[in-house]
Length: 198
Image (cartoon, rainbow, N blue to C red):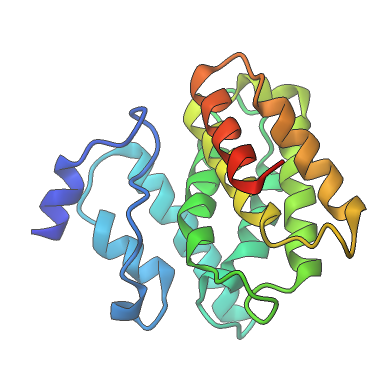
C-alpha cells in the first residue's frame, strides 16, 4: 500500500518529491532505507534519480564509518551538489541532490549537538554560492525551490550574533530569491524570510 500511495501521489510542481516526513524511526534512522521504502516501486524518473543519489551517498557514509543519519548525509549531499553544479542543461544530478537535501534537512534537530554551527555555516555558504551562480537561473523551478528551502532551514541553524559573516551571504541569497522571476521561488523565499524575521 505505501508503494502504491507513492506512485499515486503526484509531486508538487511535477518535479519535487513529497515533503512528507520520512518514518526514520522505522529504519533505525537510515534515510536511504526510508526513501527506498517510499519510492522503491515508483517508475517516475525523479524518484529513480533520487534513490540513486541517496544510495551513492549512503555508500560513502558506510565507507567512512559514519552513521546513516540525516546530519551525516548533509555535508556529503552538499558537496555532491556543488560538484554536480547547475550548468548541465538537464540538471538531473543537481535536481536529485537538491530534492534529497530538502527531504533530509527537516529531520536534523536545530541544536548544536545535532548540527554544529560551523557545519551549518559551511553548508549554507555552499548553497548560497550554488544559487548565486549565473547558471542557476536555468535550473528547473522545483530544483531551485528545494535549494532555497534547504538554505532557509540551514539559516535557522546559524547564530547571527556570534558570526554575522556566516549569516550575511545566505540571507542575501534568500533576499535575491524573493525577487526571482519564478513566482513559486519568490513565494517560498518570502515565506522563509517571514519565518526567520529577516
